[in-house]
Image 1: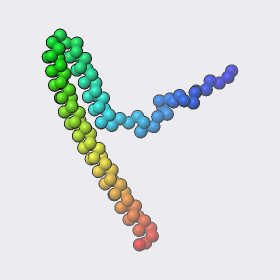
Image 2: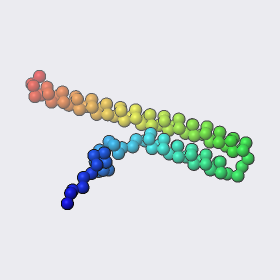
Image 3: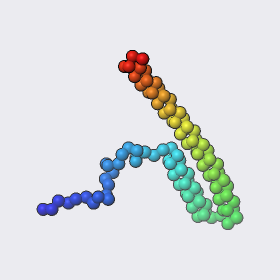
Image 4: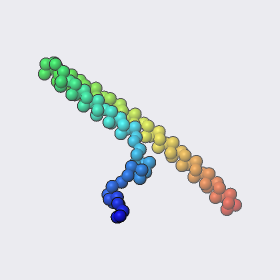
Length: 108
């Protein structure tokens, strides 16, 4: 019987590297905010209110969502800054230890 082969363009989920599967806080927060906005918009459009009142509520919700998005972006930026600072410090420590070992090995 002929062997079945997998098409070259098909990838199995097991082949993905951990980096491909990583979601950062910003991506998650963006998804939550977009989902909340869509859900709120649909709920307001389907609610039994006058058009003027619905538009006013939509503007208020959009403004609130903008403030929430700005706060989320600032939080994600702070987290990224902290992570970068930690990585830089860890790299600095490793380089210092490596230089010390090299000096010891060379007798300098």
